[in-house]
Image (cartoon, rainbow, N blue to C red; front, top):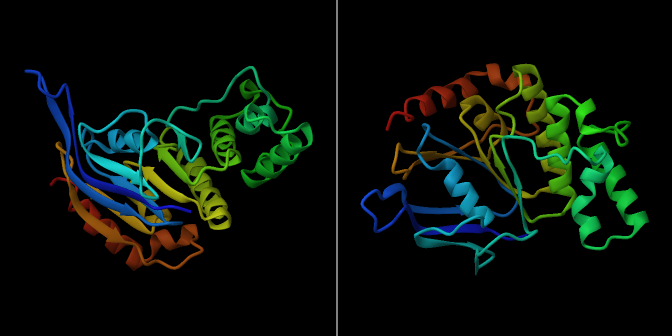
Length: 251
């Protein structure tokens, strides 16, 4: 599975116009194979912009991103994206949502059923395969989103504040379940969040962006042992990382 590299990337909306706005400047990053990485920073620092460029939704104005040495241009199934708002198809059951990508690629009926069963179980939706999205809670719809992306077997999972709209208890449960799935699949994950605790709990690496234009202010290597439990959030080591990161967010 490949690395993502960001090489001297700057992005200016409306470059060359009087109203040009530079949101990212001089970004150099490497996301190693199988690692879990989060990006934090104040609102408007370019976190989501950076993630969307990794997804290939648009190109940087300067610099480049590569996946396994190949410049990222446009979207493809090697990079799966989970957005903050759920993107569940309301006219499909949970199972059909999960198997949507493989079905488009011509997977057989038996393969589709196998994929639906596997990923419904992996994301905690066993028994809900025949339910419609309108019958599900917000947290369950987010599970469908994650299951559908994983079922498409991407090399890299890109997540833009996927749990931001959930209540605190559901959010913590989703974080734990996501880590369990990640530990099984070892996909490379890049995860954008405003929540420092979430970043610490999930990550191997936390990238702190400065205020706009976003630059890499700090990279925190999180050495907390895995697997991680919610009790870890109360340890002095966890709280010390939190204090250190809080002190950086105004830069």
